[in-house]
Length: 126
Image 1 (cartoon, one colour):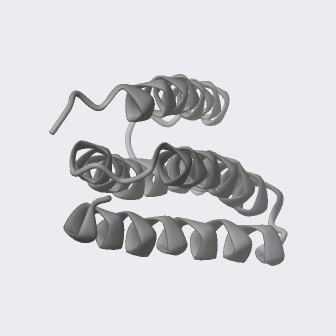
Image 2 (spheres, helix red, strand yellow; image 1 turned 30 degrees about the vertical axis):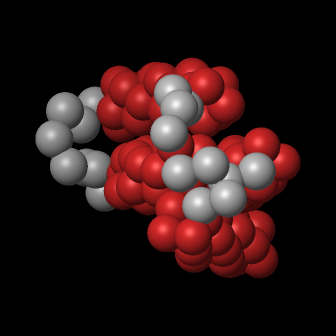
């Protein structure tokens, strides 16, 4: 077992993405003058859900990818999972923000693939 150095790179990139999503919620709250809830503002609702969905799925995915790396999964699989997670979260955020259902769906399907792939690699390792 070794220290998970590859996943740390993806975790750092996803942390930046989380901060950006957080700032989008803050900006939308200021614009809608809503400190709690969404004040009936659809843009704020979308920003809250993009941020919330990210917070719900990304930490669990990173834990599984970390376990996969620690259990000796090939470096290429860790990079593939990390890259797919980032791309999937970008698609989901774009789709939910713009209202284009197809991008949102692609983002969630990609996220589910990451969860299943990382879980498999976490158990089976290298």
